[in-house]
Image (cartoon, rainbow, N blue to C red; front, side):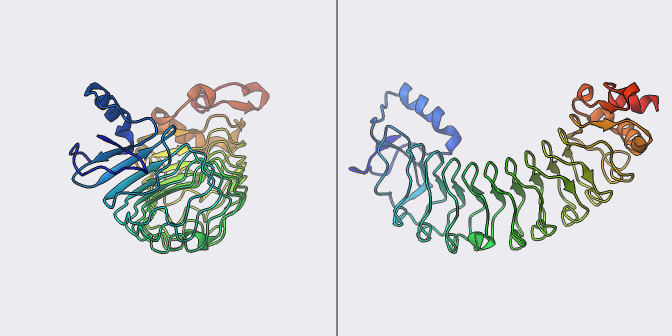
Amino acid sequence: MSSWSPEESQSPGGLNLHISRTLLLLLLCVASIKGVTPKPNACLLFQSDNGSSIYCHPPAKPIRYLPADTIYLAVEFFNLTQLPADTLQGASKLEELHLSGNRLENLSAELLLPVPGLKVLDLTCNALTRLRSGLFKVSVSLHTLVLKENQLEALEASWLHGLKALEHLDLSGNYLRTLPPGLLANFAALRILDLSDNRLETLPPDLLRGPLHLERLHLESNRLRALGEELLAPQPDLHYLFLSSNKLATVAAGAFHGLQQLDMLDLANNLLTSVPKGLWTSLGQPTRDMKDGFDISGNPWICDQNLEDLYRWLVDNKDKMFFLNDTCCAGPEALKGQTLLAAAGAH
């Protein structure tokens, strides 16, 4: 390991490792044991056969020049509001760029032009309100884009044009109220979509038309009131569906039809009092085991004859049920506070 600052460069050498972000703390400990003391105002440079990995955190000074073999760059927690358009010039081998914990308000449309091989872009905890069209026009290799905890109130599909290889899109923790039609139309490779912790009240019916094999869908902590039949229909391979902490009062009978691979369903903390007959037909037993379980706790269930279909399903799948004691009847008065599973057994 060696220290690297804008005023000086280092010759190749050092540890023969491909350094990931999660190993930084471990490597700092190893460096300390070996007596290597990084300069307090310098970024950390780790070198391997694959290339250089650079970590810049305060009190180090933000970098000015990058080694030509840089494959990993983290410039985090500096409260930067902008980056020069030529920041990545000369770093054509860059694969991961982490810019979290700054206050970036916008990004130049030319920022990523020098790094067509970029695979991961992490922009968590910034102040972005929009992205410039054309930002990703050469980003054909980018598979992970994290825009978590910014200030996005709206999206335009054109902002994401060029992301042909995208597998993981994280838009959680923003202020999104609506999404444009066709947002994911060109994202055939998308496997993980995180829209949690926004202010979404409705979703376009065509939202999931585009991805061919979506595996995880995070919609928790929004303001969704209803789940229709069209939304999930294009995704028969979905494994994880998170819908907790919305305002769902209505779920269409066919909303989950075709989800033959679903391993986890979270409907906790909504406004469900009842569900239509046939909702559970393709989920869990007797068709297949929902191996990672389900959660329907925190809803004001009315435990009457309208829950007969749910009762039967609960008995068949009770071993996969989370928070049994928090899944209770809110009515009628005679059953208020009784667990749903007990009501199912008695019924």
